[in-house]
Image 1 (spheres, rainbow, N blue to C red):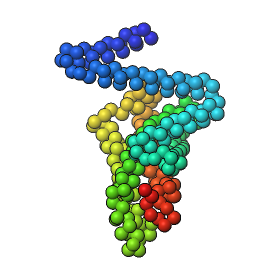
Image 2 (tube, one colour):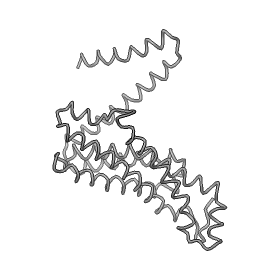
Image 3 (cartoon, helix red, strand yellow):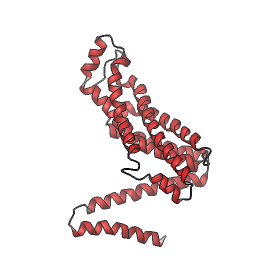
Image 4 (cartoon, rainbow, N blue to C red):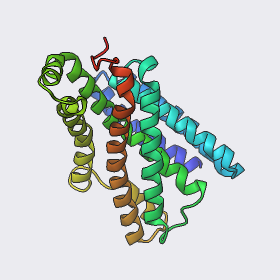
Length: 251
């Protein structure tokens, strides 16, 4: 542990020293970033260790709910939607997406790893909830910003005989496109622009290479699936909050 701490100090001292030598005014930002990282990882590690130590489904379920709750708040913050009106739709979308994508991931890996336990399901759910925040947030922001700024197009389509779903098709198309672009970029650049960190980490931990590759692919596709489901379910549930009884846009 002492050796680890010393090496971490050395690795942090290198960029800090370069910033000092060249008088780059990023020292405070570096300190804040490192501090936030340590606090977040410390709290996460403590919670996960607590869950794994007790090995009780109620504790695991409570931790899962906490992760989902944090993700819902982050999606609302990213999309700049009203917490009062959209808390329930976003929570429905996030919960549905994480449960379905998580189960599909567990089923896909069930012949290679021991998946029906907290040590597998908790990290998978954590990665899925973290991954959908940006995608879902951008998708919802695009959808409702489009309705606010191009509401006349929606009214025009309704006035010319389009159904409610048909009038919203363009906005839904744009929202899904915006939500999927980050996932597609991540999948396309997994080797070109960034290393598959999960795969390398599993290989370092002694997991067979093919199993590590299968897990990396499963999680990337699960993240893609999770983003689509979260946006679609949220938009479907939110219709009763975003439109009045005459199908007019509220606000």
